[in-house]
Structures are given as C-alpha cells and as structure tokens.
Image 1 (cartoon, rainbow, N blue to C red):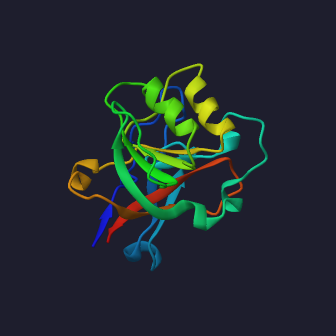
Image 2: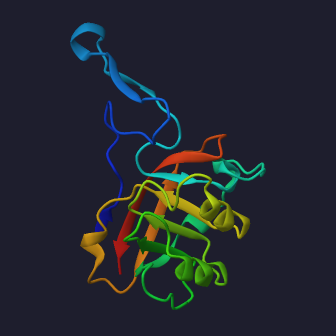
Length: 181
C-alpha cells in the first residue's frame, strides 16, 4: 500500500511569508483549442518541497544531481521531543511539535548517519535559519510541508520516496510518499 504525503498543488495556495505568490492557470481547453494545458508560476518552496544544500550554503549542488538512491529508502516516523535512537535509517519523518526543531534531537541527528528529514511544517526554524544551516553543513536535506503523518503512527518502518523535479535549482517541489512493507 502507498500513502501520499504531498500537498496538492493548487492555484493560490499559501507560500512562505515574503515569497512571490504562485499561480496555476488553465491556458488551453479542449472546447476552444482541442487540448488542455496549464501554466504554473511558482518558486521552489511551495507545497511539499525539498531544500537542497545550496538553499542556504554556498554549494553548487542542483536538485537534478542528487542521487535518486539517496531519496528512497527505509524510514520511520520519530518525534523530535524524544531522544533520537539511531536504528540505521538515513531518511526520517520527524514529527515536530514546536516551531523549531528540538535542540537535543537536532544534536543527535547531526551525530548520526541521517541524510534527509521530512517534516509537516513550513520550516525547521525561523530567520536567521541557523538550524537549516547546521543540517546542511552535515549534508542533511530537508523536505518541508509534508502531510499525513497521522496515517503512519502505527507503522514501525516503511519505504520512503522523495521525488523532486529534475531541475537546475537548489530546491524543488516534490512528491513524497511511503510504501508499507
């Protein structure tokens, strides 16, 4: 079974404060043009998206160059309010209760082999984004604005898929889903 954890992209959806508004408009219709087509205008931090290392560090990595195998793997849901127990998962879904990632939890994942975290919030922190920078310096990418963690509470482990656009940018909208195993 698959469970989608991605926010649907819709016209006028919320964007991060200060980012340009996004739009999704139908520009062709079957009745008028014989085909249907849409135009999407957005920045890369709308809806469910991955922040690449170059989002806040001077790093030339583009999303299209991230190895796909680093975006798919066994994962589990953990709470940032509890001490992190490293069971070898490089990909984690992190249930954050506060507006910033818990400091004790942060220190523990910085000392682990974690390579990517997924959260249901818009950000792991606020300006000046020190937590972002600390994670990025350790090579940990961040997926923000996921949904549906409540559907995973009874699952011990699952396969996580993070599928960004193959794009020459530091971050990207993405589809995030799990496969139960």
